[in-house]
Amino acid sequence: MGLNIKVRLFGGLTPPKSYPKNESNEYLFQVEENYRVANLIEELSLSDKPLIVVINGLICNDYERAIKEGDVISFFPPIAGG
Image (tube, rainbow, N blue to C red; front, side, top):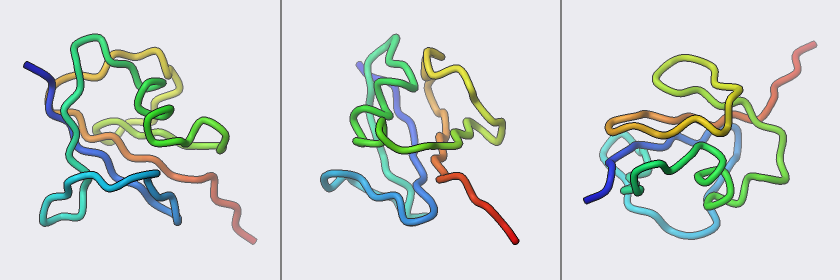
C-alpha cells in the first residue's frame, strides 16, 4: 500500500494532467515507499522550472528526501518584489 500525501501548487503552477483534489484544493497523491521529492517534481513536469519546495511548512532543498505518509508538499515559483 502506498503513502498518502497532499500537494499544493502556487503562483500559476499547474499539473500536466488531472489529479484528485480535496475540499481545500490540494492535490491528493498516493506514492510508493522511497518516493523522493525529485520523483514528484518530475511527475508534475516541474523539473524545467525554478522552484521553492516547502514540506510541512519547512523549506526543502534536498530533492532526494524521501516522502513520508501525510506530507504536505507545496511548490512555489520564485517571487521577486520591487
